[in-house]
Length: 370
Image (cartoon, rainbow, N blue to C red; front, side):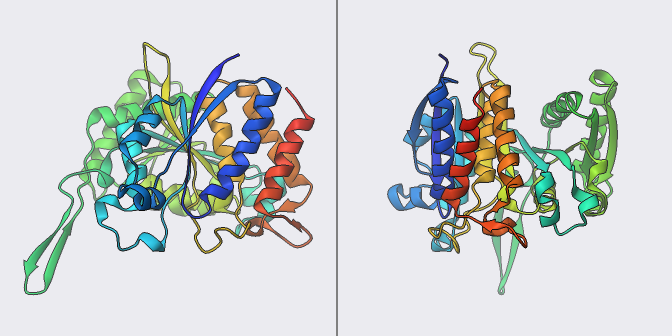
């Protein structure tokens, strides 16, 4: 039996609640013999700051480096608003991405048929939606230097963030997008702001050259990021794979998330290169939603994004595609029964807690063994 080493980082707010539901799903697959899961747990975010004075400790970073995959739930909250910038909860997430070299963020936006009415858009606009947003994750304005605030005197300050991209960074995220498109609808939409940003000019040039050289069989389109945001709420089903930089990917993927009805429905994967010696690909899986401290501890959180993130781990880290398909199908069947957490509840639906939703998905999974 394959042994899979998982590091679970529940984090802050609703993180521990939704991670507990993933452990139920892991338990089902383990009981079936799908794999032998070796689980370690650590701290990240505000809870890590409280314990260690850091957003993630060196020892937990070492566990992350040794794991076959890392599952992270959520970080942050108003409790830590006043902590120093370099140890804020989000710094733990950024450190994981940087030190594990996780440059490709995959954010699917899928609208389950049972939830088409939960979107703020018309049913015909979102029903059947299946988009993959590929976001470059370790470059751009979030990591560019200089990044600082200057005191200019006379009560004036100047803040600087730097948008930086090299050719190789654009090429590797472009390859990720083109390879995914070949397994989907064979279409990539590349997005930047070449009309006002030099980094956008380079992005556009590199994507065109990469397409011509290595992926001429895939259809490539280009859209400015602001226009793409408009098109996402106008007619999102025109897109298949969208590839963009760190900043625009952050914003556009949140727009796409709401097409599905709730941030609580959206998983994500952050991937690095495959190690040629071990064949292992470092990866971090996390829901798109935040820590939602206002509902933490109340059993109101939707665990589907966290459970779906584990499904992405089954698919992209472990090659257990059949198991991932079964999990996706179990989620869809539970939603068809009308069970809903508060964020996706509509008229006539049955309201369930975080734990009840996790129980229902685990039970449905168990009823249809592999």
